[in-house]
Image (tube, rainbow, N blue to C red):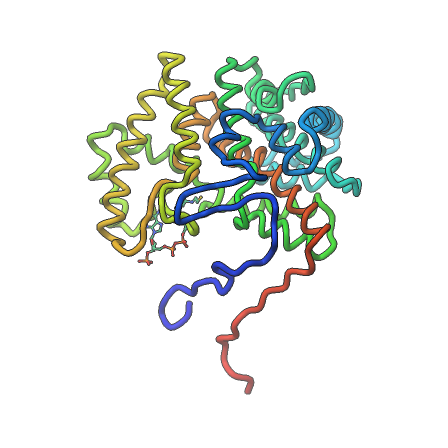
Length: 362
Ligand code: COA
């Protein structure tokens, strides 16, 4: 705290790297990943193709390498000690990825880590139910294989497709906190595994990737659309934040929210499941939260961020809420690795400054 108010980071808005990987336009609500609008990537690309774009290799090579990464990671499972026994998925993911050793191969390591994140997260999901891990099948797409390994059944094609679009959409997002963490570690000359482990630690926090589970708790607690406004007001009166709302960069609705909303609409249309009901509730809560936040913070637009509809989408494809943050990491790891490659190729040591506000030396 400084002068009785919350200290604003001296890094806010400061450019710490040149990047060809992604661009976030917070005023217009536009996200470009490797030269493509996120809406287009989600619709047409698929996760492995986006990996290839980020790592500078072709789509077929990316698919093959990520598949091999999954196979190799499965072989490592018996040597992970108690990493997968940790109750929280992000702790398990951090501990298990930390067992890997860097191979110094750039895109090769990126694929190995991307394969490993999915295998470890899926094995953790199985371990928490005392079930043995399911081996990967590299002939499947990454999203489909992740669901199969994690849930123990072959997913419906529309679920695999929706998760594929999700993973592609979250693969990279400018200099967000976890990517910055990865990039700082890379800038010291350290290895890709260390970068990714640092990034997992940053992603875990509720102000970054830890929000979608609590978003679903919120929807459960609200229960029905007619209760949304009163519930939101009570939360804000109690001084709590509405999860899935607000963003450091976006001043309009996060474009990824619309991408996920479309996916959920398609899932709801394809089945008589809960997705449609959940979507209606989520929209009511979003509407109520946007209105209440606008009343309380008229100068600061606070709209839905990526996590809001992530929660509904990941629930609709069958994942339990405890797996939401690890699933975010399964997609974002592709971007962390790309930033490691780029930072090592073009960057220099990132060493920001701090402002001393302590007592003067005696
Ligand atoms: N609910 C209620 N109030 C919120 C809010 C939210 N979701 N997000 C921001 N605010 C308020 C803050 O309390 C602050 O009010 P104050 O100035 O009276 O203290 C004001 O809006 C500005 O917030 P600030 O903390 O400066 O914004 P930020 O850029 O640091 O925060 C987030 C960005 C994402 C951390 C923030 O919006 C948040 O905590 N959201 C909820 C968690 C979440 O969804 N995380 C996932 C992010 S992708």
